[in-house]
Image (cartoon, rainbow, N blue to C red; front, side, top):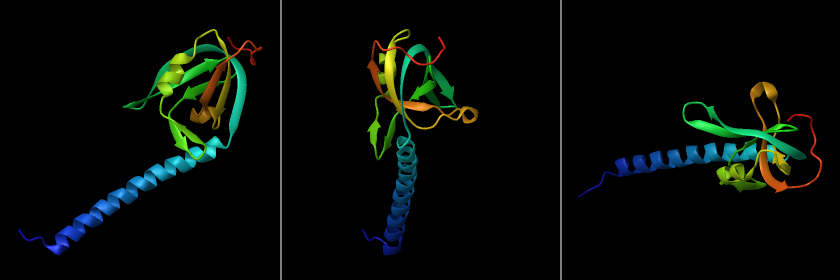
Length: 132
């Protein structure tokens, strides 16, 4: 069986194009996450509530309402680290308990942008905020 060199080089070009597009998409996402990871936040809060909020047709996000701020728990990857077990972190948070929450990102209310929780530690310290 003979292969036409034009067809195989065209196929290789298409595969290369797809790889470049995928790398660009993941690279852009990692870059924006890396920028957000540079803006860290630490707060001692009491968990007032939590829920899974529908975001579009196929997505959702885990929201955590506290005595201080509203947070999300999302998977991420960037230059400062990554997490792919957001459901486990979300599940460990208990309503009524107080935690030291480490997070990153930006809180932009009109854009529904929230701090992303990276680390939780249960504590007996007095929480900040007045909600709850």
